Image 1 (cartoon, rainbow, N blue to C red):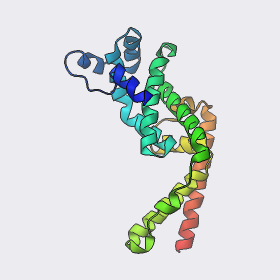
Image 2: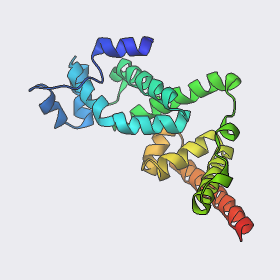
Image 3: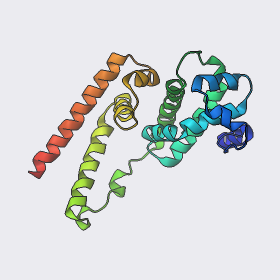
Image 4: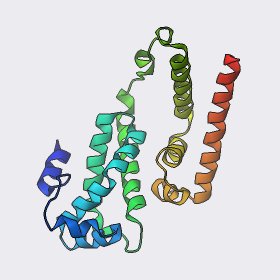
Length: 206
């Protein structure tokens, strides 16, 4: 895989030991970017390590499958390194990087959409064999996931980034390249639809 080879060649994702890594760990993201621009690849390793866990979580929200999310994370870190000279001094590295990740993920989803099949019905467990409480929770999760899937793509991402990954409205606005007011509207609409889905489920159960 090209990404894996490129990462290996750059030394990314490999733990650093010794006196070189320690000072980098004390620097902020913007300072690390300046070190990367000066040719210090160890500084980028520190950025990768710092953002890896959250990057995978966001990638999984976008792609929905673990293997695809892992590929997206690798691709996004390589793309960010290739564009590091375009990073504007004084900006926050996080939203800038996650915008790259999300955009590449959305493009990848579009590319695979014609061959993607819906696996949910085959994967759902037979609720009759579960204990009552577990069956109810499984049904509720299924309905909430189904409600999320009905949302427009960027609206779904906005609510997942905000509610599940802890990004602020301003960060989401930069990541998704939309005004902060649009983010607030997306969050409001998504919450309303999810609440309606939950109310329908509760009425059926009562």
